Amino acid sequence: MKDYRIVFEKKNNMKYISHLDLNRCMLRAVRRSGLPAWYTEGFHPHLYLMFPLALSLGIESICEVMDLRLTKEIPEQEILEKLNSALPNGLHAICVREPDKQTQDITSAEYSLELYAPEILDLHACWLEFFNQPEILTQKRTKKGMREINIKSCIQVEKISMKDNRLNLMLRLPAGNDGNINIGIVIDAFKNYAGKPILINYLCRTKIFCRNYEEFL
Image 1: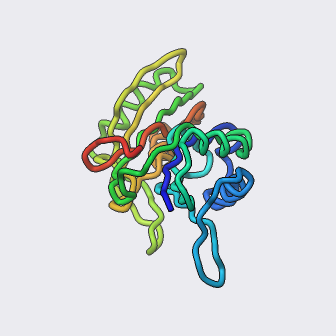
Image 2 (image 1 turned 90 degrees about the vertical axis):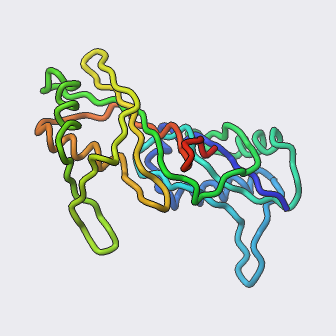
């Protein structure tokens, strides 16, 4: 047996399928590919697939990860070609490698987004006012129900720019077992602060990081 880590893109209409549907889609693709997939033993054997960090609905990604176990060692390029031949449009495997980091090592994720607000003349200034508040309070769903949290310290701005009245941001947010902040929570908090319609032209997860700030991939 040998484990492989598949890095893949999730784009276009595929951003609207749930994590459960993504799992089912990948299961079918692996079976169609003809790869010698490993199945668990017992009365109900199932194909071993593992997704280290689920992606929220409606978000594209260029850094999704799937761990796959095969019954024998296969050249990485062959795995890539066979899997891509079975994947639908919108899902595309980028590379295959041997896993060298554990899921529990994940601490943050990076997102690239473009926002547009037709009724706000200076969206850049509006964001700065929002971000420079002493606290950024919002509601988050937990196991015990909705509760108010302060996400100010959770938002790390990597890049910010304006072009054609569109605000481009690159944000890093907590992710993984130690805590997770959905990018949608940040956007909703900004919309509430602005008090006017803000449109999302583009939203994509671009990188996943570990505790030592190395990329998970």
